[in-house]
Length: 150
Image 1 (spheres, rainbow, N blue to C red):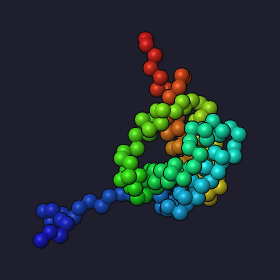
Image 2 (image 1 turned 180 degrees about the horizontal axis):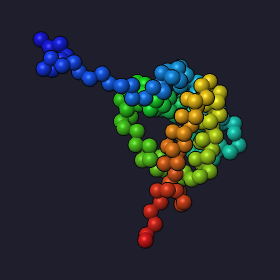
Image 3 (image 1 turned 90 degrees about the vertical axis):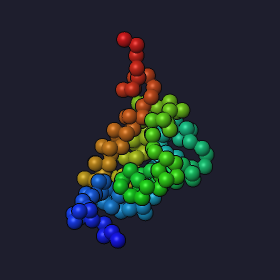
Image 4 (image 1 turned 30 degrees about the vertical axis):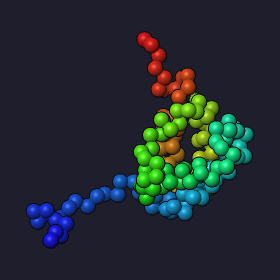
C-alpha cells in the first residue's frame, strides 16, 4: 500500500502557478468578463472589423473564450480537454491581424476588465498579459513575426 510518499519523503507541494483565477472570482467572474468583452465587440465602432471575423452567433465562441480564460488564469483545464493545446497563433492564422485589430481587441478587453474586475492591480496585470498575447497574434505586414528575406 502506498501513502503517496517515496523513500519516506513527502511529495513537494506545488506553488499556485497562476492565482488569477481565484483572484478574479473564478468561473462566474470570467463569464461576466466574456459577456462584457463581446458586448463591447458588438457595440464599439472600432471593433466592427474584428466582430466581422466571428460568426453571427457568438455562443460557441463565447464558450471557447470562457474555457480558455479559465485555464489561462489557473482554473479548470476544460479548454485543453476539449480542444487540445491552445496554439493561439495557429488558431488565429486564418485571420489578418494587424495593429488595428490588436488595438480593437484590447479596447474591448480593457473595457470588460474595467467593468468586471474591481482590483486595479489585478486589472493592470491582466491587461499587460493580454497586451503581450494580442501583440503576439499579429500576423500582417509590420508584425513582429514577419520574416523578411535578408
